[in-house]
Image 1: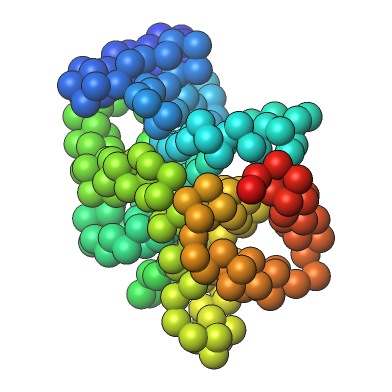
Image 2 (image 1 turned 135 degrees about the vertical axis):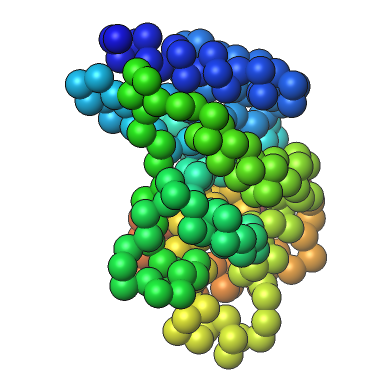
Length: 243
């Protein structure tokens, strides 16, 4: 059985589930989409007689996207938020579920005897021509219902995006914010994409703590010009385009 046939067999098996959730299939990129939310199910690696993959999730808010495209007009692949299926994503969403953490499809690095958000796992599906797809679909559905769909709902509005991306940065006083473990966590889940999307969302909804948020971001990423130079570009855009 060819790799193309294996992929199509697997996508066809998943299709009724996503159609029942109101999603449409995009055959071009092996994904399902619905109102700014995308689930990518294409393979990460193709081997002789098999494929392996990690489902990926993307949120694109049109108002945030418009500003990103104005400020970074030559950049390809801009979006509001992007994650892959895995226990780290579940922990980020405050979902601590042993059925996800210890899924038979999640390979936890042996040093993590008590996995947390800073742990590393390798959550993927390997599919051959005769693989029973039922346990794979059930595992994926469980993750979607517990983690991804609730997150999609939360991020369905600009207000929800502002809350999700920025509340965690504003949590606690400065001593808590600057503590070593908290900084490790925040830097893991707030990289360039999350920082830029969060700043734009905060500005669009007139977040009353915008200045304090900006201060914490600049403190957290002090010395990282890759992120802070682009933060400055956003601020310049706001000063010249938004009242």
